[in-house]
Amino acid sequence: MATSRSGEPGTTDAPVRPGLPRWLWYAMGGALPARHASWVLHDTTTASWGWRHVLRAGVQMAVPIALVLLFVPGPFWIRGMTALGGLLLGLIFSLAYMTETTENRVKKAGYPVGTAQTVRDRAQVGRDAQQAARRRAAAEKRAARYRERQGR
Image 1 (tube, rainbow, N blue to C red):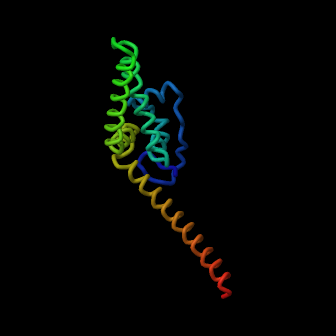
Image 2: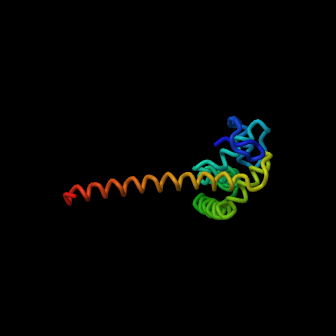
Image 3: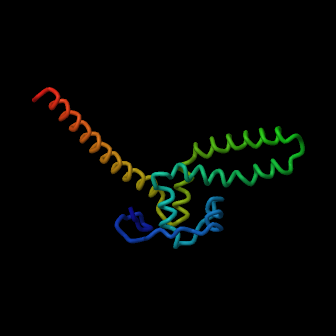
């Protein structure tokens, strides 16, 4: 679903995906140029937005984890367990503030606050309608088979 920077649907802002260096900057919390704004909205509202958030959080945590593993003195298993504990704690906090973090990314891209949640809610309504139609069709198919078996 294409939306304009004001959050209005129906415009033809085609998402422009950033290259790897810009995506890394974005993953670390940086803002992208205006030409990537529609991609930021897509990134934070697509069906896989939660997994994308976890991936960005993993990129953010990779630097401190690598520093702990490489430079903290002591046995590797202690450094590994420390890194694992930090990773788990970081993921817990990241998941706890997932919607707020994605809204902040969308705000940095120039959209009004609440745009990402609004787009996700609209998409969920569409998915719910499709799922209800599939269930209704499946129920009708089962009812037809039942009637056929009963000889009606």
